[in-house]
Figure 1 (tube, rainbow, N blue to C red):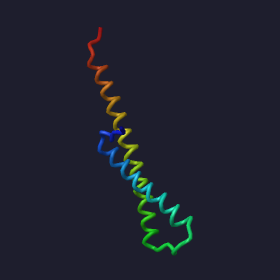
Figure 2 (cartoon, rainbow, N blue to C red; figure 1 turned 180 degrees about the vertical axis):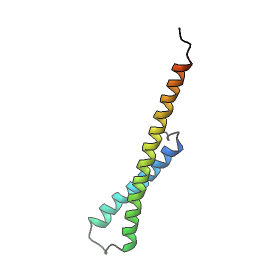
Figure 3 (cartoon, helix red, strand yellow; figure 1 turned 180 degrees about the horizontal axis):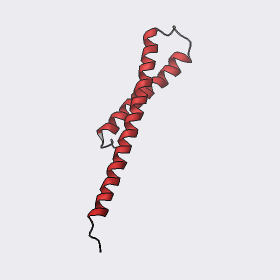
Figure 4 (cartoon, helix red, strand yellow; figure 1 turned 120 degrees about the vertical axis):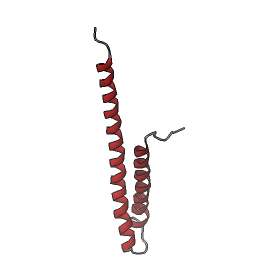
Length: 86
């Protein structure tokens, strides 16, 4: 079973990226590649909004990862400095 990330920022980023990515795939497959009604201005706005959400989700994931790495490196540095020197 796949578990959710423990970090709230990373989980939010993945949700943003998944929802916006899913909508963009739907839009390309159903609205752009198929014949049908003309695409309205509202739908173009949604596409731009989903692109922005995808970028924000990606940024959240990357920032959460960088914060975790920074926390790990600072904890490792504390262990090194707090260990008794011989």
